[in-house]
Amino acid sequence: MRSVCFILLSALLFSLSACEPSHQQQKQASAAKDEEIDITPLSAEKAEGVEGWLTNSTILYTASDPTKTELFAYRIFTGKAKKLYRTDGQIVDVQINPRKQMVLLQVTHSQKTAVVLLNAKGETLYQKEYETYELEAAWNQYDPYQMMVTVFSEKWDFHTYQVDAKKDESSLSPVQVPFIHWTSKNTFNYVKEGRDDKSGPLYTFDTVSKTEQKLEDDVLFFDSFHQMSFTVKSAAGEKGTYQFKTPQTKSPVTAEWPLQTKYTSLAPMEYDYDEAKGLFYTFKESGDAYKFAAVNVASGKAKDLFTLPEMEPIQISPNGKYALYGFHFEQIILLKSHEMKQLIIDQKEMK
Image 1: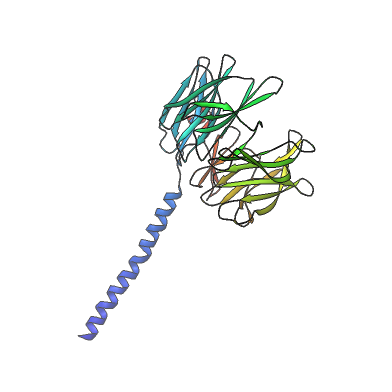
Image 2: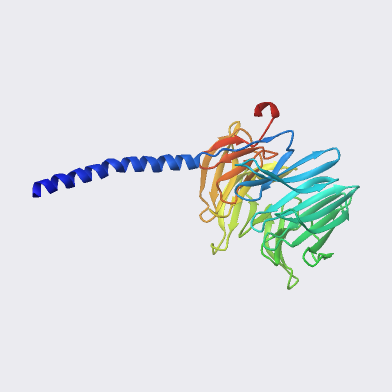
């Protein structure tokens, strides 16, 4: 009897062990299927260019004809589009806050530029027109109802206004600088003119206490993202010393990286930031091509990912899985597999 039970138990164990690889294969097949991303491309006849990510699966794009310009939300995996905004003017700039699901537009019409704030449904939350030759809007990623708007004349004289879109209030900013970067709900940083036009001192300003404080000297470049900011100082050759600051790091984390010459001055290569993973994506030259790389802002360690033929603008999706790539964001890079897919294609290629 004991031998019979042993035989039955052995048979049962063999049966279970035989089934296990099958389940494992199913899991692997399922995981592989999950990694297969089918992008539904846009026709170049419909889309002038992609503006960026609204969600992990939705991008915004613009389309125009001689009579109007329209802004659409487009689900890249289903091909469904929804019109958010229409204007008789021209949309010249689109900024997106995926965290707050809001969009900031610049619309030019009849020698005026309007700043238009929308929610994700396309409803207008705020709109104000300026008579200006050029306009710069610095949007607060912590409080998207706050912004700094700089209005330029043809001679490049300017006035900077502090705007509270929720209260519909606008007043001259106590700090008259054209390019600022918000570092919290109530603070922003900016580089003032220094001894030359290539670098200068970095200052911070508190909008509540109305106080200004100098942070550093000889800064080439400064920028900020949500919960991360960085400065760039000149290093040997055409390299820069990056200093990354996050709430998690007690002191700045440094990394040396190549710079490019832009408008006669040294500036960072094209870049973007993945807040979820703490990775700063950028480029460096490699022969006739460019290495696409990721820098860990907590350690300063860099990793080359793959090679691209050109250095062009990039924008990382909120979940860090995909990157829009190209001057019109006409391509998508799957960052895990390094596969590149076309997002905007000619009508002939769609047939």
